[in-house]
Length: 414
Image 1 (cartoon, rainbow, N blue to C red):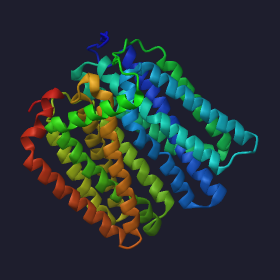
Image 2: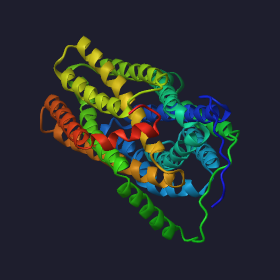
Image 3: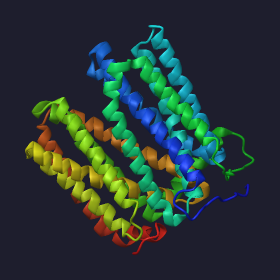
């Protein structure tokens, strides 16, 4: 196995972390602009919400299915150049889509093909950046850097959501696709300047299928063998399942009882709450992360239980609380995933872990959609979040000591 040159600096921001975050933020902004633009465009072209939903699924499923395979390749390839190549390929693909629409030959099928291609590239980029950040940042600054990253992500989301609809009306879809493609290219160019000598896995077996089987076995054995990590994955699968059921109800709820404009305002409140939460968490150094993680999940669920039967002013407050604590729980969980895994198997284990979590997210979304056609969506929201609180409390009380072991790895007090 090749020896690695570690490039870790004590400061929160150094050249490498700034370049990684810069490329990440640019890519995220482009992702949101593209997602929102194609949603409006498909509705305008076809008038079909079902078709729009299908394209959105195509934008998610490949990433979910490819995560384990992507993790195996990430462990064996230079993570920096993986990030660069994924961004450049996504940029070229989206610019080509823009050119086709400029020529007047654009259609839903081409949008779907591009969405699938972007989704295929996404896990390779995401896993590479997730694996690279802990190797260029000291452990004591990891949670704070992740909070800053989450803060930038939320700002990118806020800017994209607040500007995409206006830009789509002003510039049209082809220009927006062109801008999105250029952001990917800009992201890839900036990542070239990351200075890092990666640690690659070397073996004598050149059969990719055998490597896949071996590495999946290694990842599964790691998850089975690490009791603490396994409980966190098991816990968050339930969180994603019930959260997805609840989240699926949000748009139908505001469509039935309010209007799309109010939903847009609520979405902005969620993002602003996440930004504030990330900013606060980035300054915290000594925290009992496990306790904060559990409390954040419970408070989020309580806020969601209350909002369906509240007035608009109360709903705004409850969504702010929900967005604030969702950001906290997601940030802590992402750091638990990264820091709890040995460096040499981090890519493959993250790939399996993300797939398990996202599968439960997709199942929750489908279940929520089916339930909403049969039952009152307000009661679905209440029951799903109540069940989540009960399950989270049972898992935590049964495994409190094991779950608290992660505090040491994250540099906090027990």
